Image (tube, rainbow, N blue to C red; front, top):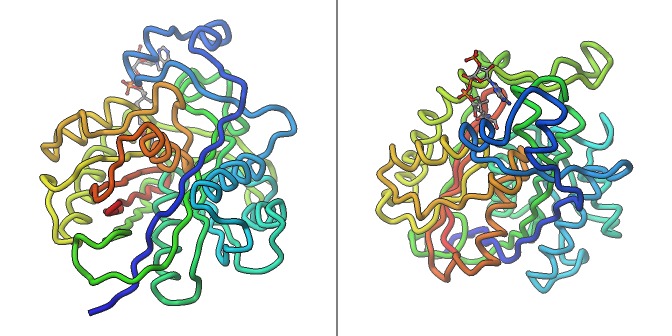
Length: 325
Ligand code: UT7
């Protein structure tokens, strides 16, 4: 049987030049490098420059992913951008990226699922490729979370950073077996009962302001390990695989303790977990494609490897994807 699979054929990233260390933060708020490293694993984060927008970060990452795929913007007929920090309330920042890439055709739109955004965008693009409404997609996660932070709230301002990651997806023929190359299965969830544990206290329809990020961190943490391990197991089962088949976990990078706790729950060797939270902090929707590109470029991702991507964020939203490389 021949079926359509979406294969990731290129990855790219962009990180703003400015690096902010924990020591710099400790000079602004009542925190310390020791607390941040011990409780989160974060050592530094990148911060976008004045006048540098989410669409700029996303465009730079997209260009690198296209180069890695040996493609040009003319090859793309779909852009799905995951972001919670678009340049403007509208238009969709994906259309700004489309324009910056010099494209005048195809479909471009944003997906809002905060830290799970890349998994949502990947799932939407995968469905469109499988359904035949697109052939080659740019799936991007790009964020400027520094613009949403309350720099006086030590409980949140130390956790986030700016960045972008991009992937090129191409529709290819598969046999419908778990050794096909490409996305084997994706699973998404949301539960709006937890809206008030991680949110922004503003918006166009409520306050008319952008607002600042608010989080009850300990409660988010409690849900994260359970939700993530469940959806990872569910996704593997949907692909006809088990945790023993996983070569590399590419997780959302919120907290090193969450990454370790989730791997432990699934019985996975921590050495199989890609960690970038130390250098990037939590970049929301950008973190999974940033981690993926890091592992691709440092040679950890090998032909035929089984990758398990996962994320959880505000909403709550959470999801995972099993990808054969
Ligand atoms: O990406 C979306 C998903 N987001 C997440 O997954 C985030 C999940 N949550 C977390 O990662 C952790 O809960 C945090 C890193 C946010 C916090 O770590 P925690 O171990 O849960 O700490 P806590 O909130 O229970 O706070 C412990 C103490 C408190 O002091 P008291 O009340 O014990 O005196 C906080 O006030 O640490 C204090 N604290 C800090 N101290 C120094 C909180 N933030 C800081 C800080 N520096 N930056």
